[in-house]
Every structure is written in structure tokens, then in C-alpha cells.
Image: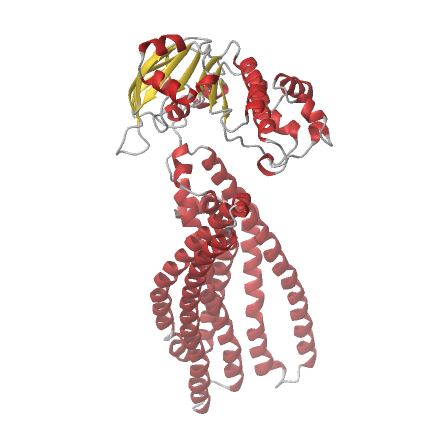
Length: 568
């Protein structure tokens, strides 16, 4: 994990080096003050060298001006570097998420994923900037102040530094407890984000059922858990800060008592004692900074660990051998078995030959495996055993890009982006011209509806197309597929949520779309699939019957019972 974190510094080696160099000069300039204090008390003032006192003051002022600019450089460019590293991690995480299989999204809520990408990486950015800077500056200051204090009086220095092991012990002891508390806080933050995303997305359902109070209670439970987790983290921080602060206060007590005794017995003179008091702060301040940095470190490490967990997950299986070959549409299911988990097969030894340009309907009871077949064709999931062949080639040898480029899907639940109608249709072919988009809209029988809208094709349709009717959403999704022009078409309950009049309009568009394409239709309304070339009855993950409408009715089996139940 550490090597992975360090790798994000590579593109910014120059700015990182300049940041560390600037930090070095900031620390070095800070070391000059006690040295000049000692020289003035021992030489310039007793010997009345007032000119040198003035010159030293002016020189120190000039150096402080330089340090002011260097601090600005460290703060500005250091933070910019951290933000860019955060952006790189977010980019890599987004790419990773794009390559994850459907099963990942079945198990992870989008709100929790967003929390890892936004909240967790925000604290990683702070660690990326302040981590090396604090360690470098504070390390230099502690080492430099120790050497200078030892030169002034090594016995007194050793007495003071005797407290350091105690400070180290407390830090190590508290670190694990803080790690646990911060991890719990991250988890609860993700839960809140997930609940919020779910509640906002489903706000219309909430209002329709007057369940606002229920949603508020559900959100408050997560909110309360977050407060408890965060309170525990603050408790650990408070214990850590109070105990380490007490130890650093002891440093001042030791300097006051031991230094006074050394001065009384003339082991050091007044100038050395004054310089010692000033220099001890040069040691205590960076030590305190390092101690306080533990919070940022722990928060950042926890955030990066959650990022790293995502980055280590197994990606979607793919050959990555893209040929951009056009498939003809011949499909063979060869003894395919599949399960979403290891306990129950959704498909069991399923075999089926589909010819090029054939319209095949999949019917049967809910949960029989119809939609699963539609999910396996674009390789959204890996089959457990058997094979699926396209034009005689195994699905395992065809890249996901090539496969999905040849498949168009129209589902009952249409997803539309909060963008213009033009761009929503263009999503089917990103390099399509406006004329191509308009032609696709005409083929989908949605062009006239679009022209009646306030801004025509530039009309913004709202999140998930909230400003459109169900039929308009469906026809927009059909226009997308027309624009994509695939050789294989999947219609998964594409009209089941529509009224009869709208369904007839959509059916016209779908018939035009299915022409000269291999088409799989999943439908509960058997009236929509009477004209299919082949009807397959799927039950318990197996192909029970197949044939055309008349053949299956004559057989008097499952299909006939389904048909008779729909016309009663």
C-alpha cells in the first residue's frame, strides 16, 4: 500500500523537490534566532557593538521576508500538489469502477462508493501535502535544535531529552486506538452518503406514500451512528492530545528547574541559559507539530486504505483484444449454467441456437432466468460453465468492447442523463452528427414530440428524464439504439410499464428497430410476441419448450397455460 501511495508523487517530482527545499530553508532560518540571541548577549551588548546589533536585526528581518515567501510557496504549491494527487487517485478509481463487473454494483451502494471517491480522498490529499513536509521540516528542526542545545550544554540537553521515549510510547500506544476510531468514522460517513443518495433518488416514491417521517427516522439512525463514531474518534484524539501535551509541558518545567540549577552552580552563563530557553522551543514546537500530525496521518491512512481496497479488487474479465468486427447476429448457448451465488443456479445446462436476423421471444414465470440470459449476452456476468458463441466464436475470446458495440439494449427502466435530448440520444454514438441524431429520433417516432418542446433538441430533460413521459423516455432509448445500429437487439420488458395506446406507438418503433437484426424479446404480455420466429419457454433456468405461437399452443404445455391465463 505504501508503494502505491508513493507512486502518486512521481508526476510531481519537481514541485515536490522544490517544496522540500523551501521547507529546509524555512527551518534553517528559524534556527538563526537563538544563535543570534546568544551572540548578542555574549558579545555585541556587553561590548557595546550597537552597529552590529542593528545590522543583525536588519539581516534577520530580510531573512524573515524570504521565509514569508517560502512559507507561501510551501502552502500554495504544496496544497496544489496534494489536490492534483487527489485528482489522480480519483481518476484511477473512476477508471477502476468503470472496469468492475456488474456483480460489484449488485453488492455496493452508489452512495458508499461516492463517499470513498470524495470524502476519503479529500483527507488523503491533506496527508499527501502535509506528510512529507511535516516530517521533513520537523525532523530537521528537532535534529538541528538537539545539536545546538548539545553544543550549549550536553548534560542539560540529555536531561531534557529523557522525556522523548515517554512521548514516543504514548504516541504508539494511542495510534492503534485512533486508527480503529477513524476507520469506523469513515464507514459511518459512507452509510450516511448511501442513505442520502437513496432517499433523494426516491423522493417521489417517498412523497407518494407519505413516508417522509420514515425516511427521516432512517436517516437519523445513520446520523446518530455517525455522531457516536465521530465522538469516539474525538475522545481518542482528546486523550492523545492531552497526554502528549502534558509531556511537552514537562519539557518547559525541566528547562526552568534544571536550567536554573545549572545557572546557579555556574555550569552555564546567563547568555547560554537565555539561548537555551529560546532553543528549547525550537525543539518543542516541531515535536508538538509531529504529535498533532498524527491525526492527519491517521485520517489520511484510513482514507487511502479504503481507496486501495477498491483498487485491488478483481476487474471484469476481458480479452482486451479489440478488432471492431461487426457480428452477424448468430448466437449459440452451449450448455450454459450460471448462478449469482454458489447456492442456486439461475440457468442450468441451457442450450439454444439463434439464427442471424431471427426474432426470439423469451417467456415464462418470473425468476425463471429470462433477464439473466439478456445479462449474459453482453458479458455483464461470467458464466459458470458452458459457453456462448457469436458467429461460432466463444464469448471468452471476444473483447467486451466488440461484443457490446454489436448489442443494443432497450429495457423497461430507462436511464437518461440530466442533459439535452440531443446529447442523450447521441450517447448511443458519441461521434454522431446532429443530422444522424435527428434521423434516429425520426426512426424512433419521437421527433415530433421533441420539436414541440420549448428548446427542441436542446431541451434539458432533468435527472433520469423526469420531465418526460414514460413513452417519451422509452422512445429516446430506442433512438439511442437506432443511432448505435447494432446487429443484435435485446428488448427486456421494453413496453410492460406503458399504457395500451403508448405501447402500440412504441411497438411500431421497436418493429422498425428489430428489422434485419437478431432480436431477443423478454415479455410478460404474450400478445406482443405472437409474430416471433421462435418462442422459448424458460422455467427454473431451463429451456422447457420452443417453437412458434401456433406450434406451442398445439403442444398444450406450459406456453398454452400461460397464454390462456393472459386472455381470461
